[in-house]
Length: 186
Image (tube, rainbow, N blue to C red):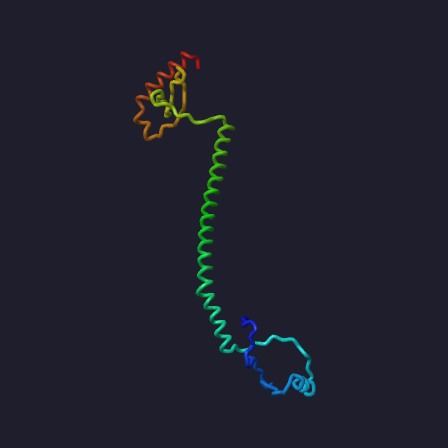
């Protein structure tokens, strides 16, 4: 509970209510008379206690000014600080995402390269001017001229819907392959 520093109202009004107990036990000239009255009339102990009391008009005014100042001066500054902090946080989150994606991309690259190294195979883009596609037995067979030699570069299946169109050229190619295979002894 908030208090006005170094201030005590002229009249104290507590908020406590008790059924069967009076609000006041009387007025006394001095503290000693009040203590004597308690000792003579009640079995009681001296006790430390924190009670609630009503604020007076001066306290209300001071505390109202304090929260108005907090509302009008402190809170806007704190909200601005919060906005700036949230912007920094969002920027940091964006940097985190970018960094995380970079790490992930790097790991993927490492994986691809290491797989390539382990397999000992890599892709080579062949020059169209020196690379030929030959259809044979439902396959596309690719040859390329490399270092003065026509070398087999790859084989792919021909989809069935294309095979009918290539039937006649495929028969001619098969005859040529058979001749070359017999000649080379393969």
